[in-house]
Image 1 (cartoon, rainbow, N blue to C red):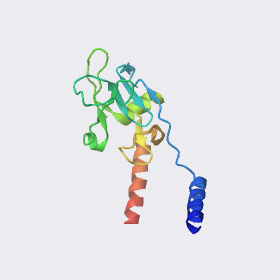
Image 2 (tube, one colour; image 1 turned 30 degrees about the vertical axis):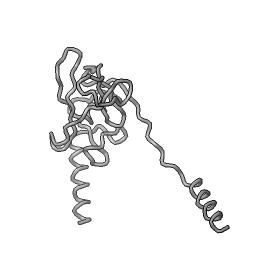
Image 3 (cartoon, rainbow, N blue to C red; image 1 turned 120 degrees about the vertical axis):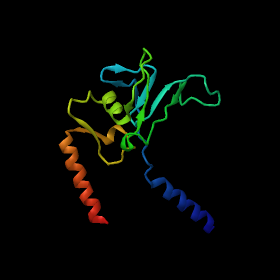
Image 4 (tube, one colour; image 1 turned 90 degrees about the vertical axis):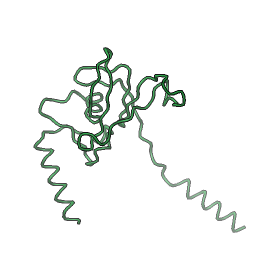
Length: 152
């Protein structure tokens, strides 16, 4: 009898706990400085996929014959970088956070930078990016740096 009560209690507790909400990932054709990369899709979570090329038959597509593009993580001071090709075959070297921002929000104004709100250079989610001036970014960096030093 006590086993049944424990199981029922456990099931009841599991029901009332809120489930973690999954972020809805939106996909668009990436655009950077007016150039569209039509052989690719980029997500609001900062993932880039390209149309499958049958080089590696073991590689499975992420969805609809698209494969995930790996980014360089140790290049450019820890910012992720990708190397997409445009429709004419020209290769570009692009920072993922800038590509996400321009593809989903708007072109980046001259003299502006894209800031990672949480300070994590690998978190290229659209909700973690904001455009600001270099001086605002520097002020934010120094403010966060001071807080880090206080907690040590």
